[in-house]
Amino acid sequence: MGEKLRLILRKAHWSLALKGFAFGAGWLWLPGWLFALLALFLYFKPFFQPGKLLRSFLVLLGLSLGFSALTPALLPFFSGIGELFAVLLAGLFFLLVGIKDLAFVHRAGRYLLLYTGLFLGVFMLSFWYAAPRDLPRLFLVATLFLTASTLLFREFLGVMRDNLFLGSPGTEEAASVWDEWKLRRVLVWALAFLAFQLFWVVNLLPIGFLMQASLLLLFVVLGSDALRAHVKGALTPFYVLRMATVLIFVTLGIFAASSWEL
Image (tube, rainbow, N blue to C red; front, side):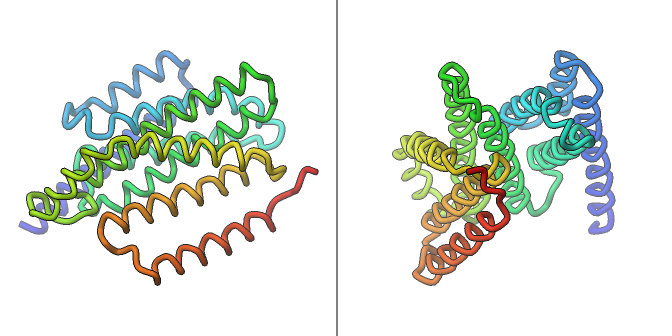
């Protein structure tokens, strides 16, 4: 029975890999409208739990379109940027459909990796497009940033609600947490607004859009993990000290690796 299950999972993983390759190759070679149709087909086939990670899929689709516009601007600096973006998008889509279709046994870590990768893409595009500081462009960046952040935070809280991180479904503890989160949907907007404020603060630092994106990603990932620890009752003084240490040393590392554009 165990060997049969392993064979089924191995076959499913190959299918996911082909889907990821098709997604990345389609982004690289197909026109935008045809790529969007391909992405919809790959996501909704098979038609299983289509709404489970729909927010992540919409953000990934938006990132794909944003990277299409960003690639020509970066080609003079790195000739392989298109292929690099294609690999990144293919990897994120592989994780997304694997989690949605329950092809992975251990999904929590893979969801966090997907969550982190999507936020990194959102931050990279936002900082790049916010560099020319004309008002219409900044307004568009702000709108898209808030939309993507709200979608991802909403889904993250939904994942916690569905006990992917909290333990076994159906327990009394899980039910009480679910009731608590239903009363705190405003938390999604609070988190998105906080990330939005941090975005404008980090945008003032002259360290380049990649380092700006890395710094903001650090804040969001540590903040999300602290929220998860709080829900699980694991927000201990030792945890806070460890996270503060990580924050300080990684921030210093980002600053040291940055080319300051003063």
